[in-house]
Image 1 (tube, rainbow, N blue to C red):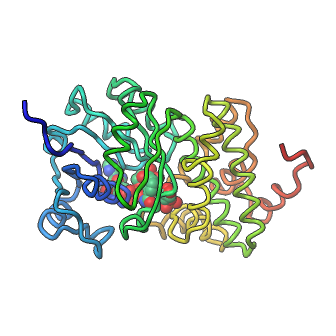
Image 2: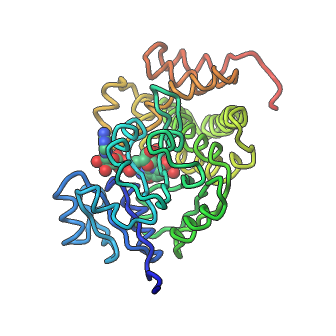
Image 3: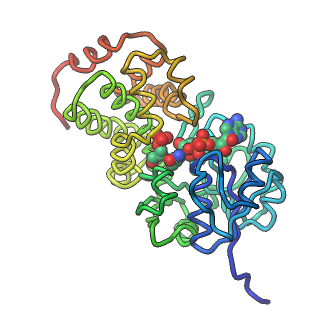
Length: 337
Ligand SMILES: NC(=O)c1ccc[n+]([C@@H]2O[C@H](COP(=O)([O-])OP(=O)(O)OC[C@H]3O[C@@H](n4cnc5c(N)ncnc54)[C@H](O)[C@@H]3O)[C@@H](O)[C@H]2O)c1
Ligand SMILES: O=P(O)(O)OC[C@H](O)CO
């Protein structure tokens, strides 16, 4: 039997990270079909090789096409790559699940916690599709989509309990500008990705209030400490949180003006209400929805997360900016570790 030359990937959907990962996988040699909800986006990708909604300036590879038909996207797919808002995953995947072939590997790109259940994306994927954990991988790391679309260098972690599956995804995403490492620590990768968004909100708030780099460094460092506490309590390895999907992503997101979460926080710190900041934000800002769910997980695991706690209180407009800053700075003194 002749071997197929290219592996096939179906990327759901044509948002900013979905488009960037579709480009990575096409540049790595896969035939990629993006599922777009809007026909005009699918047409623009097929005819003009552009995604005008997110990256009008970047030409997409010829191996990358698009469709509005989920079944057509999934036909013959070796990989199903999921990149939609975490809160929309369960409902959409319920419709797509019957179309997933028995040997397709599902790759989650999502960095959020489902508010209703406190579940991570890989858990929702397993629950909705019945697919075993060994066929579900997570790709996470310091990956601002805009930089990757420009071909700027970046690295990430691909986690799957089955190392051979993680290595398949690694190979399918390996390009001269994108370097994935493998791991078996799915919990660590997903919690690193979800909680860094909440910490980036805190950093944005501090910046918006006029605080300096010392405050940023304090929030990143203490943010990593509370992220690690929770993730380890949930079964993660602390080493993962010191890696690309933990510290790496935290630094990128908290430092970059491109980060939607940091920018949302900056709006709040400058005095916008949550409603005004939401209206000013066009794209998915996972930390806003996930903060409360992360806090619930922390309480369930008996873990203290003071930064997440105060960000959640601010998002629910239970405290003012000044009260939030004072609440963090006036906590009882304690040892660092
Ligand atoms: N943008 C990045 O740099 C980046 C990097 C790494 C991870 N992520 C993660 O990837 C995920 C997707 O983020 P993004 O940046 O691509 O967001 P985005 O807002 O750019 O795109 C979201 C996509 O999901 C679709 N969508 C929105 N609501 C939907 C719904 N209710 N049902 C079905 N589809 C819906 C939109 O049409 C769009 O195609 C998030 O979890 C995010 O944290 C983003
Ligand atoms: O723009 P943000 O804040 O959603 O962050 C994007 C990526 O997760 C950075 O790795």
